[in-house]
Image (tube, rainbow, N blue to C red):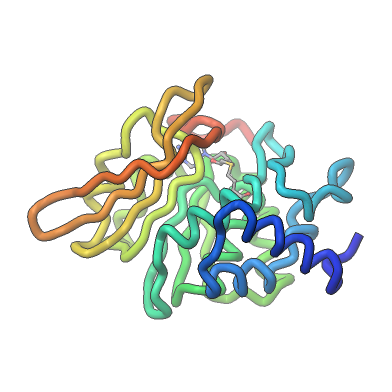
Length: 213
Ligand code: SAH
């Protein structure tokens, strides 16, 4: 399958019907071919609104969840965004359409290596991927205008909250890994953090330390 006019139309229709209505987000998702991020057996399902398996036992998120998280971030063109959980690199590539600079971290070397190759292939020069335990954030590049966590934590990790600018927004799935989690939007103000519960979601867990591969 290719991301031709028909596939795009159906893809965007499914996004809109699931609440992705922000035009900049829809445009960004139209510009990034999800098929490039899904290899092998499931490649022909890349344009369906479902999560799919990727290497290292991880998953590429459902497109509508990528869209809802992206629009919840309200990214401005000059923003620097940190993503925890590179996975396939798809979410980072979508963010890269909207932000000035994207840093993305995964605990699996292999996923980072493969995502970098895709960013190169797509000519995305404003995305930098690192292998690291993302629960510590990226102190060297902090603070960030926006932070997105695409793995579920029991609580929003403290170092990530600390690396969010005043006025910054973080989106993070919170809850036990084997249960339904809640997608939370955290906004930092001069006086503290405001938490908003968005919707139930299901993500792989945020795991401490580096992966074996
Ligand atoms: N955003 C991805 C999907 C993420 S799946 C995409 O668009 O394809 C969740 C990812 O979080 C997995 O790749 C997993 O390896 C990673 N992860 C889990 N715990 C982590 C941690 N502590 N630090 C960095 N990455 C982590």
